[in-house]
Length: 222
Ligand code: HEM
Ligand code: HEM
Image (cartoon, rainbow, N blue to C red; front, side, top):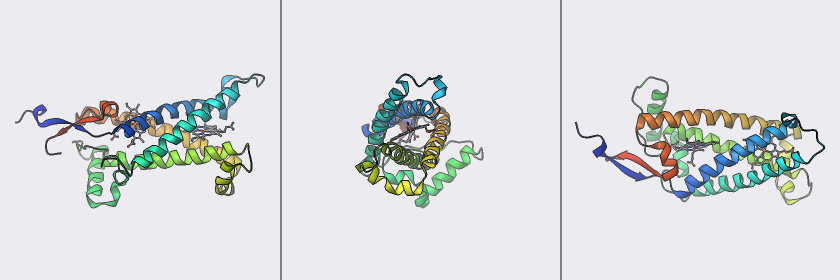
């Protein structure tokens, strides 16, 4: 049998915008979730309301929100500029027959029908499909978040832009949606870290380090 290591080479997969936006999103989501939970339930901190702590918590939430929004917009723009692993098509494997076959192979692995993990260069097909939903949730968070934010200034540009959302949601409906989607994102993150770790061990392609360095170890034929 040929030496496994000799058949592997380093391939540049994740370009700088993919990596930078991934980590900006991650950091801002952590800050947004922590400050968001406090905003939703100020008594979490046992605050009396006589100091300006909630003002600072909201300030941090809104600052992280702008970083998050810019980063998500930049990543969406890169879906039309980046390499094939960053492109929008990567997130919808279901639209091609090859993609559907990859989806099925990965699904079989995740449901214990197949013992061998498919070796992918970019996102695996199931992960990519999940990421398309995650990006949708990112957009829901930004839209409901900025709609809530603009309520402090009716008639402002942001308030006018968000008008369709005020007709779709009541104020409490908007808060509830914003709050619930946070828990969906937290659920995704738990699964994401588990799956990435699992794939790192099974694929032996160095996927965890790849999101820092951009490089994955792939087989010659790939
Ligand atoms: C561009 C993105 C976002 C914007 C503009 C935004 C904006 C806001 C605004 C304006 C509020 C209401 C603040 C108040 O009533 O004082 C809020 C609340 C909150 N945000 Fe965000 N946010 C964003 C993203 C996120 C993300 C990604 C998370 C969590 C992962 C999050 C979690 C929360 C939570 C839990 C609340 C409290 C909701 C409640 O129970 O009332 N936000 N956000
Ligand atoms: C708030 C936490 C996190 C969120 C919301 C998140 C979300 C995402 C999303 C949306 C992607 C697709 C990226 C793109 O194509 O632009 C991705 C990829 C990736 N993430 Fe995360 N991530 C988080 C934390 C982490 C952590 C802590 C690690 C490392 C242990 C990690 C490792 C990776 C890797 C290796 C990939 C690319 C590999 C692949 O799935 O094909 N992520 N993540």
